[in-house]
Image 1 (cartoon, rainbow, N blue to C red):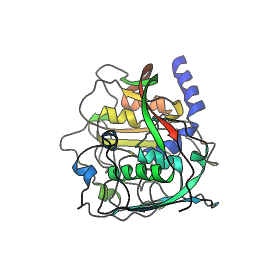
Image 2: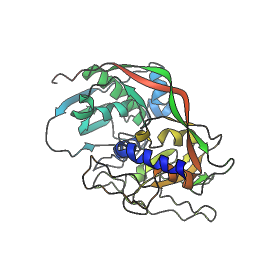
Image 3: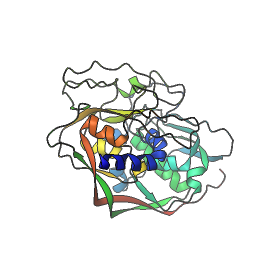
Image 4: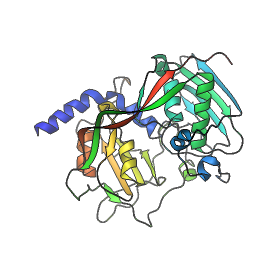
Amino acid sequence: MRHRAEWRRHFLATAGLMTLAVLVALGVLTAPRLQAQSPASQSVGTQGAQSPEAMEAAGVKMSFDVASAKPNKSSDLQRYTNFPLGGSAFVPTGGLFSTKNIPLLIYINCAYNLTPQSKLIGLPAWVSSDRFDIEARAQGDPSKDDLRLMMQSLLADRFKLALHHQTQQAPVFALVLSKEGKTGPQLQPHAEDGSCATAAATANKPPASGTPPPAPLSPPSSTSGLQLPPIVCGTVFGLSPASTPGRLRVGGKNVTMAQLAKQLPVRGLDRPVLDNTGLSGTFDFSLEWSPPPDPAQPGSTSDETGPTFIEALQEQLGLKLDSQTGPVDVLVVDHIEEPSPN
């Protein structure tokens, strides 16, 4: 009980920064208007089945045909993007990249496919505060991975961003089973005939306020009680609504444990998470917890009766986080400049 109380105090003290990071990384920060389009045209990123990280490592360069990046000095804090800047959710945009009022840090996170756990060092403070409008277009119908690579080129051209990867030994959390050989009720192997939504289907009902539209829950399993709305397989999503106001909910279908570990929203704990569960195959999961009130969002509330993230992880998924030291990929910023007028 003492260990659990210490976890709760530590989590509540450090997790206030987590909510925005979760929403961005899981693709909840979406456009108020999305047009469902036919993904008939596939691009290099999808045909080659290579991640942007692999293509970056191979020295693959891609660029927009035209691009504009302008500072946004307005007092309006409303943000707009024509597709989710985080996660893997994506609806083809016909080569258009259109955003308004977005901090540069979020563009960098998008371009390099960073998660709340990623370590990025050497950035000046203005990168988190200064907002920019970017309008860019490419030929064809590029994939999200293609657009990430194009964003890397745009950041290098307009912001003179230069960075490099380093592997460092650092504190990490190892994701392990709470009880050997047993998962929790909300973490179940993905059935081979399990249904999945398509990316286009998830965009047919666009959100009005930047949050995912409510979706009907799937029928509960007779053995697990796991309920999920139609979501795209192989991805982790922020889900709405949660069962109780003041809670957050995420879920995924057909995801590996490595994917789940990478996407766990633990930025408030400031450590990467490495999969050490020993579980192979893919899984469906749902995780719901009560975050602390966000001081950056006046009026935000939390369900004080609900579990913390750490408690929910153990009770619902049968997993826990062990403090260890391990290899961490770090992005080190060598140079960055505010853009010149264009």
